[in-house]
Length: 277
Image (cartoon, rainbow, N blue to C red; front, side, top):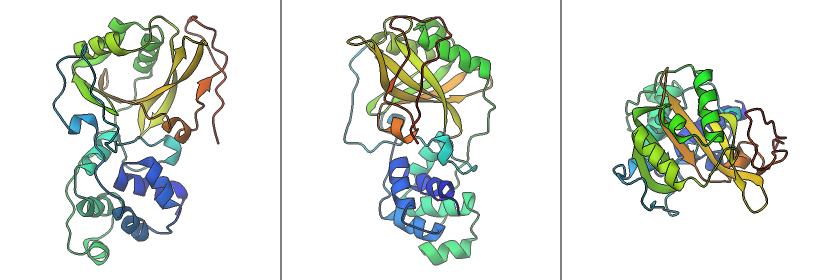
């Protein structure tokens, strides 16, 4: 079994790429990996799992550093099987032993007798993966340009009317394109075109961006958040902005960008991005 298969299996169990890499390094088969994960498995939510959406996007944002939040997985650690963010969030809502049975049965293809031998009398819980949507590259290009130009109306136009925006470790989350725009207008530290630069990525098999924000103290763009997007054929229905900066290392990304002139955006900037290996 290659390393990505073991890591991806542990990630489905734990919802944490950090813990998955650590556990996968010390096991040699799916059974041992599953049992090792059960000693660590809890529930890693997204903000929308904990409370109702906020109706006040201009108000203070609630934050919790005590919650162990769901994390994304970079493309280079995936194994080619279902791992989209919605599926991982759904698995996290299932008790750990049932979660293990579900993953082994539905994704790894284990027969019921083999699962019983490993876990005892526990049944899988049906979880349906979201249908695959081929990303609209033109839509993603417009999305990137809208953020880099800090054009909030253009950003709003790319979301559906009932889209969700959430951003762990903030427990506040928002529903609807209009409220997403109000949130960005109020709380995003960007002020003008060029303050943000987006690096295209893949996470959980979904389009994603590493966002770098210009620091006004020295005009250097520093790591800010990683956004993971869920799309329909024509719009964005869900965006999760992860503020855990340690994820930049997991995605082999630098902490800052070199080569971006201060306060300049013409849509063609190409900074030097030195990826970690």
